[in-house]
Image (cartoon, rainbow, N blue to C red):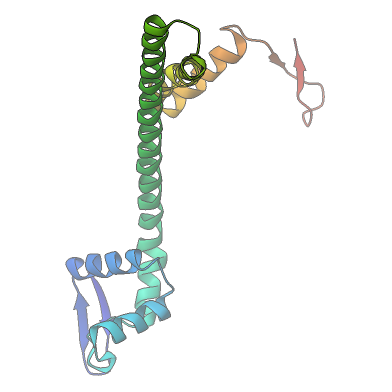
Length: 185
């Protein structure tokens, strides 16, 4: 609990109030303390002389000592969640494309089987397009879904395995000059 001195008395701001202010500050895009305090005064019809809201200095202290670090953590979590959603959406889209490609092939094969190759230009185009769409789309969702749930370390290990074929391509050797790193095959 933080204390603030007002001209007339000391006001204590409890944790629940600070959390509420943090949420407002974060949702407003993390403005500076002066701008944030002015927003609070205008939007909430607070009277700053009555001690309804913290001083600009106290808000600055909260931003610097508590809120900024927590906001960074929340931003990282939001980005991770967004990335996962984007990847999942892309995987779903590629699966749909692969299914459409298969259906296009089936439709064209049906037509070709019933009518022969005589005037079936559209059916042949549909077959080729369907095969192309399936070829492009079918492997990607499987590959993407494999990597989505890997940790950073697992991804690095997989990258090393793929790049080196499971073997170490280079070894580091202690250089004669401590400012230089020699890489030897």
